[in-house]
Image (cartoon, rainbow, N blue to C red; front, side):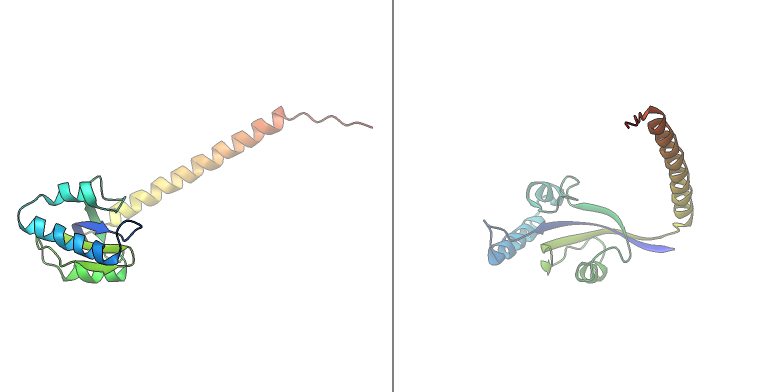
Length: 146
C-alpha cells in the first residue's frame, strides 16, 4: 500500500532576466491572482518554469510518497486538500502548490505487471541481439593477405 498525492504547482526559477527577489515577488503575485479567481492551470501553462508539468497546467498527477525532494514533500504533506500553499523555496526555485487529492493505493498488481513486462522485454531484446550478431557474422568478409 502506497500513499499518493495528486497536486499541481507553479515554479519560477531565478534567471538572467529575473533575480531572486523579482522571482519571489512574481510567485506571490500569481498566488494572489489565483486567490482572486484566475485559473491555476492557465497561469501555470503561461508562466511555470517546470518543463515536466507546464503543458498539463502544473498538474504533477499522482506522486508516490518518497518521490519528491524533502523540501517540496514537507510543504505538500502539510497542505490540506484544495488549499493553496504560501510561496516556498526549493533548490529548483520558488513554488506555489495546491493539493487536489490524496489516496492510499495497492500497487502490488501494477508492480508485478511491470516486472513481467520488463522480463519479457529483456528476453526479446536478448533474442534480437543474438539474431543481429549472427547476421553481422554472416555478412562479415575477411581476406587474408600473405
